[in-house]
Amino acid sequence: MLGIILQITQTAVTVQDTVAKVAANTQTKIEESLWSMIWDKGGTLMIVLMTIIFLLSILAVYFFFERLIAIKKASKSDTLFFNSIKDFIYDAKLDAAKALCKSTNSPVSRMVEKGLARIGRPINDIEKAMENVGRFEISKLEKNLKILGIVAGMAPMLGFIGTILGVIIIFFDISLSKNIAIDVVASGLYVKMISSAAGLIVGVLAYAGYHYLNILLDKVIFRLEDSSLEFMDLIQKEA
Image (cartoon, rainbow, N blue to C red):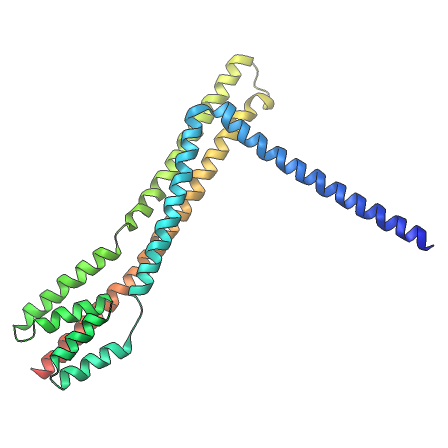
């Protein structure tokens, strides 16, 4: 009885291994056929298009995370910093307040530092100087952000070009074989769908990343405006 159970177990393991090997071989063959389809049927133009889409995806990933880190760092709220600035202004320790701003690396600190440097001048001059610094800080955060927008627009268009190429391949194959059977048009359909899918996936991800970063950037802008108003109210009370 025990021998029968062991034999059944070994048979089940063997069948499972065989199924796994068949599935792996099938997956490998599908991947190889797709790449060979692109290489053989798509030609040089198709390879160039897929290479450009791949490079665009790398650019999108790099600049997304590079800007994400920069914007996240700029959006950190430091309540202790502004409370310290208030205390220094109340105590008329402007030099200490300026020193704190210089030692704090953030858009708000640089904007407040400019306001502190203008204390004694008309309120409008102080406000305008802080607004200029705020705009400059935002422009620095927007640096390279437009690249994501360009990728979001270019990738689907390149995929569409690949789609047109696939249609051309389909009609070319039909003209050679004078037959519209599915096996004749299948290779062109593969090329068409692969390029469209690749371009759309890269484009959608870049589009989503671009707008997500813009949402985070809007929060930084709001924080700068809020800090500017609070600073202006503070120095007006002290005037």
